[in-house]
Length: 342
Image (cartoon, rainbow, N blue to C red; front, side):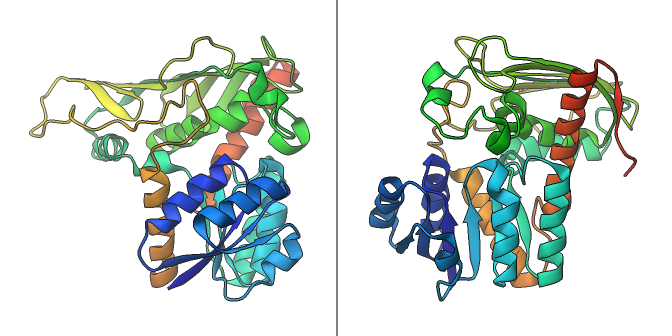
């Protein structure tokens, strides 16, 4: 039986709780959040002792791991403290908002001998895993062009009613660091490392400290080039779309589902058949479909059981933060930015 503590009292922490309660051998023992009313509600719904003091929370016994769903800029600080208490750490994306903080978190977890993972649930989607397999097998041939489009919309109150969204200190950025980071991770996972980026980020619609619209041109180490568009300013909001073209054809992914596969040599298997998730991500932050989070959590528990590696560990999670930082730097300086070799 695993005893789980949940840090955060907002919607994503409820997603974590819903995922945890559906896994056999898991017991939610504690919640901790700054908003007393929201955190108390989670305790009532899912069980577990409720804390408003994080130090008291970390001393709760028994507790084996923590799921961190607090504001992004607190992830490393809280994860490091969890590691000091010998707790495994599974963090909502992103790992934190700077690579320096992420590196400190990775080091702390490695020194403490605890597992570190990130909720990048796109990696668990059936069609995305199918696409990854095809790419790894070389079915698309030489990589040529990739496009990632996150043309989403969030209303003014999404930022106005939050103490941290759209604020540099705790959100670390806007539409890219918060919403687009899933697609950043996905492109890196599917296509490999980016060697250079040129980008422009603007605040086009919302009254926030950070960007709500960004476009980036990506040069991949495998020779492919690509574009990434991300925004929360794009009314009414459209499904996330990824297109990948190689010398042997093109595959298009929309809302986690392969909708088109045009290859020179037809595959033996039928691949345009997956089931999309039911989350209205393009227009709402509410997670109704928890299957992805559930799969990532179950995989993380497997990594603890076997002393293995989670689907997305700290080093993997760092890659998306590094690329997002490079995009912001390029926009700020007006120049291309080269990423460190891996």
